[in-house]
Image 1 (cartoon, rainbow, N blue to C red):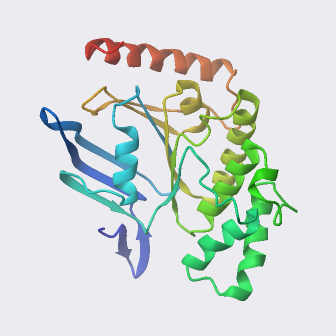
Image 2 (image 1 turned 90 degrees about the vertical axis):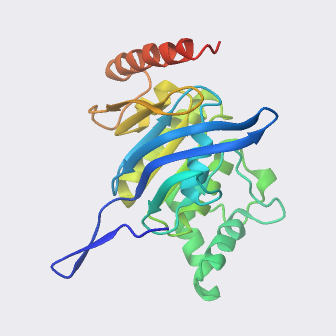
Length: 261
């Protein structure tokens, strides 16, 4: 991928965390090539939290996979500042490893020396509020705790860009709300750039500095909103609810326009 660095008076300046330029993606189907994404252009600034929102099947996860480098666009280009870290809806932890060893595996793949891995894994567990859980097996962890370990493992990749594909969708409302708080705190503490996929409008507004709405298939950037509501926010806050209602109305219009129900 292309670099996101520029030089200014011999100081390296990060221009963007991710740059998506005129990206389209097609897949082969029974009726021929199916266009899933069409001419997507989008930047994620260093330290920015962006949510990708849209109806099911609009190509949100496809776009995230392209940014992660798991697939290649049919047209256009994608550049990132370093290799992104990706967190899925399912925690995908190895059940035969402890929480700490799952994180250590990511550290090992990242080239961290063996004698440093445990200490770093314990630091990451503390960052996600799981101090003392290094030796716990996956089956001993709740759903929310497993996602915290998955987040710690993603952070272990030492990336400046975190890609999150509906990571809290399978959790109950209270656990999801708690993890919203934790993610917001970690983002603020680390200065990470986050590109977060969701179909939940209030979740998008609760978390993001900017909400990007994709139209129904083929996915195009239909509209963007700058979220100028101070953090910390709550799902039930009046400004969050008000902006969520506005976005929901536009989303419904997009779904109707494309004939989906």
